[in-house]
Image (cartoon, rainbow, N blue to C red; front, side):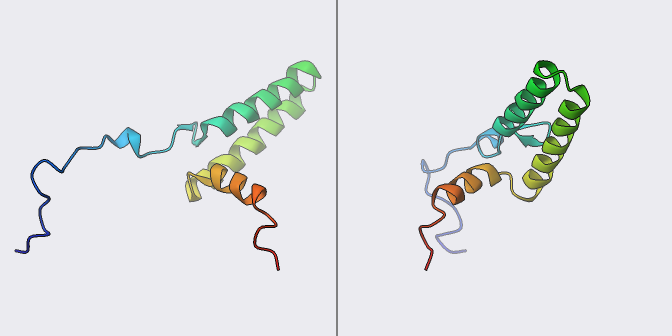
Amino acid sequence: MSRHDHPAPGFEAPVHRSLAEPILLGGAPRAIAILNGTLAAAIGLGLQQWIAGVGLWALGHSAAVMAAKRDPDFAPVLMRHLRQRGHFSC
């Protein structure tokens, strides 16, 4: 047994699982789910286009859930990509 198998006493701290997992709302990232629901409600209630609002919500939420299944941190990565788009262009 080598000396690297066990941490030194006093240098180990338990980390709760909720600190390491992303916050999801219905399987989609929380901020995107709230934004999608607000936009769908504005179209459904404000413009009185109920079918378009429900369709937009279902399509947007399904796309966000599928993206979150692949990578739960896709929203910050997408925002960083959009902000630094021309940074590495030739």
